[in-house]
Image (cartoon, rainbow, N blue to C red; front, side, top):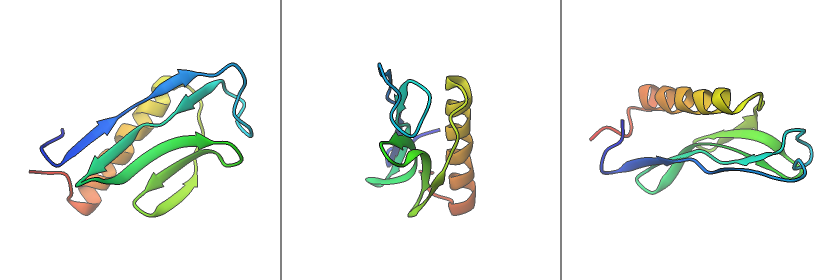
Length: 89
């Protein structure tokens, strides 16, 4: 799935108290990088809550469970690759 110019990373950890305004107890930040730039990312941030980045666009997302979050991320990366034709060597 990844070549010399792109990679993905996922970091997730349990936090003792949910990060407002979320109600789940996780910090999560899967990201896809192409040519040194984030093309897809999902994270949660104090004050913003769960949200998704695709290119320069950002909008809210919903964290329901760990496996679904990873699946949503993979789907977003595949859609970005299909729509923009990036990441192929």
